[in-house]
Length: 249
Image (cartoon, rainbow, N blue to C red):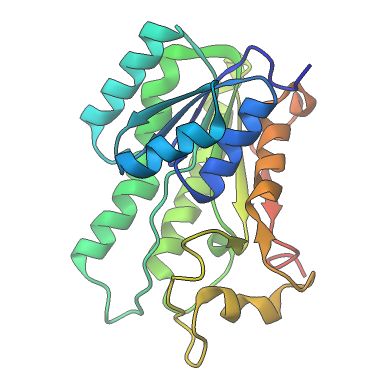
């Protein structure tokens, strides 16, 4: 028996990286997994990778009509949700003085608006005792040059998790945040570094990580399984760092 047997779960941004790793682990633990992504080719490949327990729904969490379609499908086919993982995210680097309105709107649109309305629109389907997991970041607790807008969105996500934990406690719904550090994903090595002299974000972070390596997406997925399962039944409003000690030491 898996830790998530018979649970109905949703992972936004599940077509690649951390989201895909969470979706695969949830399915392996016995859950039905709805996963979203903006690009159909990547989403279809993710559904194939996750297997027969996966249902892909192409959508952009910053578009409320897309969310309405998503939750309409879940209601029709499953009737409820036991776990929601608000994972979809966007990251761009720009120092103060270089930030554009378009970058600001894109990043807040996906990371904050998207997370907020994903959870709000899921409420009618959330079973009492459900688990909501919000992906924040170590950046919410740190000040890394060039990451101001992204870090602000992740700090907002962390606070939303706290607030929702208080608001939903009466229904036994637990809300927690996971804050990953640098995780080996397809986008990590491609992202430019805001730190002068470093080719990418991974190389900029590496000397600062006490465990001396970049994390793996499956390590974040393991944390998500814990928070989604009954093993964390007395945990809510918490922030679980998966960062190799980056923001702790």
